[in-house]
Image (cartoon, rainbow, N blue to C red; front, side):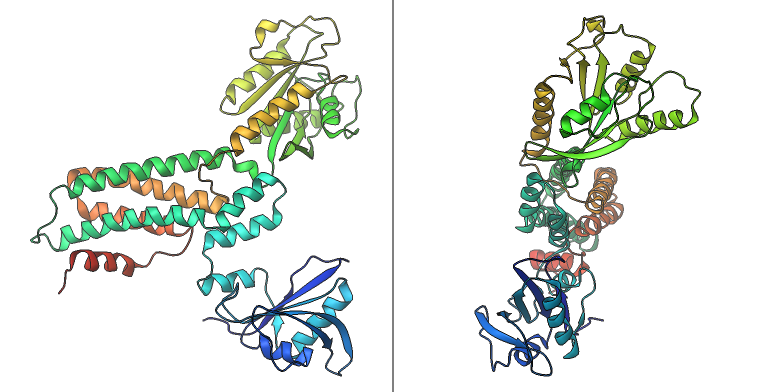
Amino acid sequence: MFDDSTIVAIATANGIGSISIVRVSGKNALPIALKISKKTNLTPRYVTLSTLYSKDENPIDEGLLIYFKAPFSFTGEDIVEFQCHGGVAIANMILDEVIALGARIANPGEFSKRAFLNGKIDLSKAEAISKIIEARSEDAVKLLAKQLKGELSFFVNDIREDLLFMLAYTEVSIDYAEDDLPDDILEKIDVKLTKIKEKLSNTLEASKRREGMIEGFKIAIVGKPNVGKSSLLNKLLNFDRAIISDIAGTTRDTIEESVKIGTHIIKIVDTAGIRDETSDIIEKIGIEKSIEAIEQADIVVALFDNSKPCDSEDEKILSLLKENSNKQIIKVLNKTDLQNSFEKSKLNDFIELSTKQSINPLIEKIEKILDANTHSDEMTLISKRQIQSVELTLHHINEATFPLQTGELEFFAHHITEALHNISNITRPYDNDEMLDVMFGEFCLGK
């Protein structure tokens, strides 16, 4: 049952600033605003300067009021925004007055929830709103802005329409076999099915490749002890975050920091040195975490020591890189300021540098990889929920292929219906009446 109570919340972050915004939504938003401002009316979408009063008629502040009349507001309900001077006390005083006049504190995300329930946004836009508030990089903002404009909604709706077409024709073929249907209908359905598979597969691949864009791509720095991993981390951060020493095993745990490279926010993980054997239990746990960091990273920066011959520990690193060849891997031959002893033939496509000097070649390489993963017009899913929905949709579409080819249309219809439900979970739930509208509207059946 829909809650029609009037809700209120402070819409700006806590702390001191030039302004604070208190937002009220619901059927009593306007009467409450008129009471606090002592105005007789507010013109929709016009800014009104007004003194704001407490219930005992003492002035609280002089601020701005903006009234958005339903249904032309974010939530689809009457909304009034109080824009007062910044600070914790003033906004809370206005909040208390609004509550005293019958409103209640909004639950987390309730304004967006009401917008969804009132048909103002779909689930994909609601998720984009949540993510764009938390976005830490320019790339994430650009991606999420596209979703706010409805890019993902259009993508999903196109697939829904094709699936509805298939389902409607299938149901007609099952229930109205005696009616004349196009001879090539099954071939058309098969073509549409193939195109949807390709579209969803490309979207999944692009989304998984760009998964780190919202929260920051993760880069793991790996190598044997004393190869210069902590020195590289400090150089990237431009301050001494990690302890550096000549004692093997100084770094015993993963160290994680964020840094901006170009327009990208990245998480850099400095790992414990990976060696063949150690009797130190703590160091052993650190090595296990290093291997885990490689598996979780988007990019792996593997360091090797130019001044020492390639040994069994280096070979272990190279073996780990082969096991994770699906990831972006950058091999770096460090300490080039010292005489070369490392067999360069062991590495291919590597960067030579010294962390005591410039690391610009590495930074440029990382930025190039990140640009390739982010500067693309491919559709991108922004949450695990969306990815799971597409994976399930693709599963049922693949399962539908065989029944279509063998003429088992009931099984085909079942899988297409499941695909419809799953793809629709991204934006708005699928209603069976949609299929009936297509079925009866397109074929004029049941007359």
